[in-house]
Amino acid sequence: MVNDQDLFDLFHRKLREMWFSEKKIHNSLPKMANAAQSDALRAAFKKHEAETQRQIARLGNIFGLIDRGAKEESSIALAALLDEGTEAMVKFKNSSALDAALIAGAQAIEHHEIACYGTLKAWAEQLGMQDAVDLLDETLTEEKDTDKALTNLAEEMANEKAKDDVRETDHDAPVGVATSATTERSESKPARKVVAATKKPISLKERTVKAKGTRRKGRN
Ligand SMILES: [Fe+2]
Image (cartoon, rainbow, N blue to C red; front, side):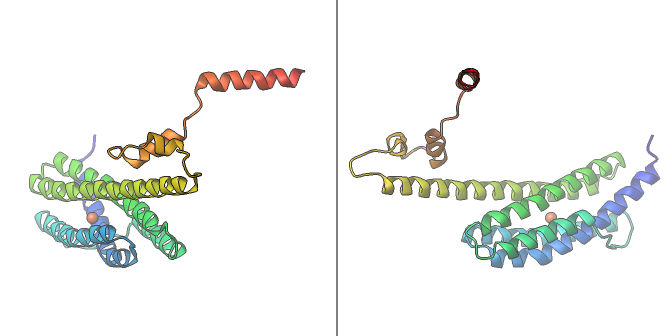
């Protein structure tokens, strides 16, 4: 069974890692906002920069609650995620996929933070530190909301791309000939479904029949 002191030491170390991580993230968010191509993504990064400032203050409060000085402990995982995000930002600087790369990098960091804050909250509960639990829960909720907001932005971008693809298909079609996309198109349906409808997957039965046909041909 875990000794309370050992669990407390573990909690304290993780808290120090988050102190290090949030400060690094706070430094990186303005760069990500500057790099973002869409206004919505830029706004999301700026909003999270302000939240991160409050998250740093909350961590400071928890250090006070447990009567420990706020000290950084470097996090190898967070440093690697930030490096990966920066590398993608540089490599895709002039690419139309830059925003997609920024979202992917930011979500990887959010997922890491959600795991860490979830763990810290569970340990604080085990140690009976309710004030710390409440503060950690506030931050955990913000991280989850940020992750959801990024998912929504990614889906909107994918839908925009799908709409562009449909427009291109419409443009390429001979005059008077409706493409499968235009015939299936409905103003109320999301463009993603339109694209899915044009790429009908082969069923298992069809695949089996095809495979049997190929084997028979091979024998002849
Ligand atoms: Fe955070």
